Image (cartoon, rainbow, N blue to C red; front, side, top):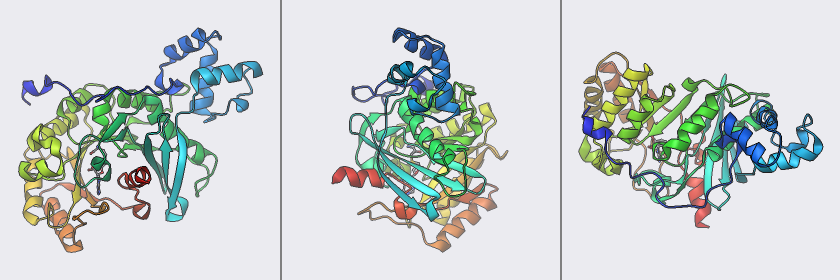
Amino acid sequence: MPESIKTLPLVFDEPRKAKKPPRHLADLTAAERKAAVESAGLPGYRARQVSHHYFSRLVDDPGEMTDLPADLRAPLAAALLPELLTPMHTLEADGGTTRKTLWKLHDGALVESVLMRYPGRVTICVSSQAGCGMACPFCATGQGGLQRSMSTGEIIEQVLAGARSLARGEIPGGPGRVSNVVFMGMGEPMANYKAVIESVRRMTEPAPDGLGMSARGITVSTVGLVPRMLQLAEEGIAVTLALSLHAPDDELRNELVPINTRWSVHEAVAAAWNYAKVTKRRVSVEYALIKDINDQAWRADLLGDVLRSYGDWGWVHVNLIPLNPTPGSKWTASRPEDEREFVRRLELKGISTTVRDTRGREIDGACGQLAATTAAT
Ligand code: SAH
């Protein structure tokens, strides 16, 4: 890894000044919560009680916090639990086990999250930015540009909203818990690094300071912002890293993932390999199969060769995603026989490969289309 990559300036954070969302309990560490409560003229130890209600009991209604004096509930909620997300629409598929919600943020920006319940696991796909600045031409979110990055509290509230509906038995299958979070909703998480890392800390911190989730169940997906990938490897939190590669050669990747003109296929793959080496966690390579664009047999071979050139110790897993065409797009998903051949060639090279299931396709579960449609009307 060239040393120079690490020192490149990071121009993708906070592209414009936006009015900050109200401060929320989930933005703060335990010490900061205590200080916030004290500065509102309330006893500091109350912060821990509110955290317990929020993260462990999944209660956000001050009326249900019956161990708090009635006259303190409203001021505590005002200090720590402002409403960050307003639900605008909910769409369901798969008998209600896939549920997508469109949220309005305090400044009117729209984001979405998707809950997917499988036997034995529940995954919530969260947004980390309203819009996205990465401009990948096959992605609906990429077409609208970036509005703003989300706060830690706004990210966490998407998970908590899902956790509450599960705990209350609103999702078919009985009461349940969130086991996995994937940063595969709107936005580029590595371009909102600080808030994303802080939200991962809130998810993994034991109760009552956080949700007590396993870092292994959290996946951060990136277009390949190399300096941030290197930084993530040093954080000491073993989340799963996913790299959205989509092409094994720079010529095509420059078109499909424009940031490739800044950090090439080899730089991005080297940073992913470095992550696997440092954290001992297998990384995922995401590859949307697009008919006659990136699904040729020779590209499967080249992808296998590129990945294998970093070693064959099982450091990488390839996740093929059938393209979910965006409205008006000239691109579509690969033919079944081309998809099968792509998988076969990768497996021949010894690369573990799966094809992602396309849950929630009929509710545009894959790619920011609901927010895009609503914004346009
Ligand atoms: N910005 C991050 C995370 C957001 S999208 C990233 O790019 O990794 C999560 C995944 O969905 C990415 O791999 C992205 O390339 C993929 N994706 C976006 N639009 C898609 C579409 N129309 N069909 C299939 N996959 C898509």
